[in-house]
Length: 297
Image 1 (cartoon, helix red, strand yellow):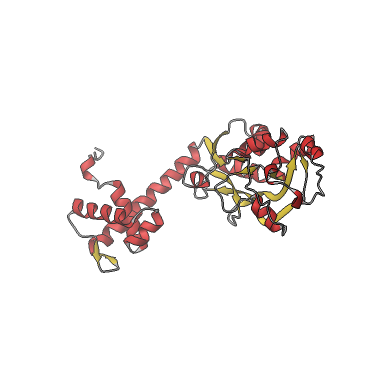
Image 2: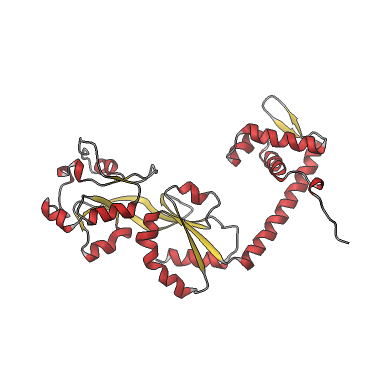
C-alpha cells in the first residue's frame, strides 16, 4: 500500500527552502541577498524549522553560521529532493508545454511584434503565444515570462533591434517649422519635444540625445510627457511635436510617409532591444520555436 502523508509529516516548504538556501550560501545574509528578501526573514524561517524538528541546524557565531551534523544531513537530503523535483518538472514541462509567455513593453508589442505575428502562426498554428506587456522589466524577469524583449545591453541575450535613434515629426509639422533630416537640433524648441517617461536608466531621453551631439538641450522645461509609447507616436503623427524613435520600431511609419526624419541619427554601440530566454533550463520545443523565430525577424 502506498505511503500516505499528512501535513504534519513534512516541514513547512518555505522554511525548508530558506534553510536550503542558507546552507548553500553559507550564511543567512548571503541567502537573503540571493533570494531578494531580508536577512531576518531567512533567520525566522530557519528558526521555525529548527523548532519544528527539535534540533539545531546551524552553529551561530557573531558573523557566521555553520551547519551542525544534523544540518548537514538535512541539507544533503533536501538538495537531492529538490533536484529530483526540478528534473521531474522539467520533463513534464517539456512534454506538456502549450503556451509560451513573452514579456515586452507595450511599444514593442504594438509597433513591432503584432504586425509580425501572422508569420509565427503560419510556422506553428498550434503554438499559443501569450503576451505580458509592461513598462517595468522587473515584471518579466521575475519568473513571469519564458522569453522577453528588453531594451539596454544584455550580453546573455540576442540583439534583435539595434538602436538607431532618429528625431521624427509629421510632414505637416516639419513643413510648418522648415525641418528636414539635415536640420540642426540646436534650433529645436522645448515645446516641440514629446517625451517618453520610461523608468529606465538606459533609455535615450531628449537630454541624452542632445548631450551625445554636444548640444545643450532647450533651456525651458520639456513638455508633452507620456507613459505610453504608441500614444506618443500617435501624437507625433497628429502633428503635435517631435518624437525620438528607434528605426526598427517605427520604420514602417517613415516608409508610409506618416513620419519623417527631422534631425541626425544617433547610434549607441551594443544598445538595442534584446531577446532574453528566462527558461534556458527547460527543454521546450515551443520556447525554442518562438526564440528562433524572433531572432530571425
